[in-house]
Length: 313
Image (cartoon, helix red, strand yellow):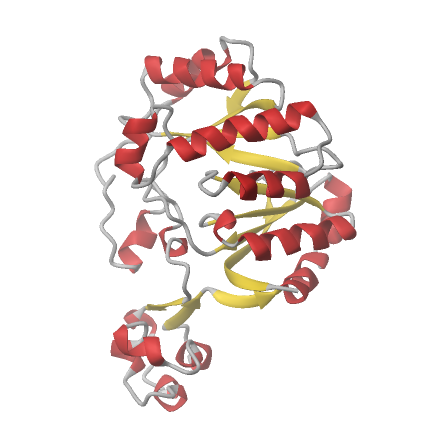
């Protein structure tokens, strides 16, 4: 069985698929979304977060550091790239002044954690959602996790931007029960400029995933391919014009019956504190969240073509 880098496990999630779910966050994402809620998940490598205000001057980190440096000042810095036991300083810190973000987990190890919530999945029709970061950035690990969950009858969902090789997207769609496909910006050129990748790849993969879901069993997916729910972050100034929303509605309708509906995810600034902790510039600091009227108007446009649309979490 493979292993991969996990940076968070959140229990009792109710916004990432049906029922009560456990959300597993896989590290690494090639997109540069200005509104990203998990900036700590972009870098595929484990990292160390330093929180000086929590330090109790116990020097446990100093004693644990294999390199003999001062972790309170240098943990996570360039010198740590050569560390033979990355994160030893954080694991030794009793005050969590140093925090390891991202650790390697084997499939069996993670499955042991997921089984603890099995009663909640069974009672609520829930399961596990793999998100990130971009979970398709770790395709081997993700595939083995999906297979392990299926073998135990645990419902799975994968939340993805779709930025991966088409074969990877379709392979994952064949192994999961639900595909939560983020549609960032419908104008591929505009999206590519803002997000820093060729967004045409994502749009093309969304079409193919929807087609695979609608056509049923194939050689690649003998059980059939997972149905798709489009999840659209609703970001004022980026994708909230009437023209763009109408284009999203047209695109989703044309993609066919493999798509079950659209979930609109209104922008909010709750992640701002994370950017401050990591000393990352928050580019949307002046942006206001859309009000209820704007959200209702957007939902009306998205559903005008007959595709169900609702506000998501």
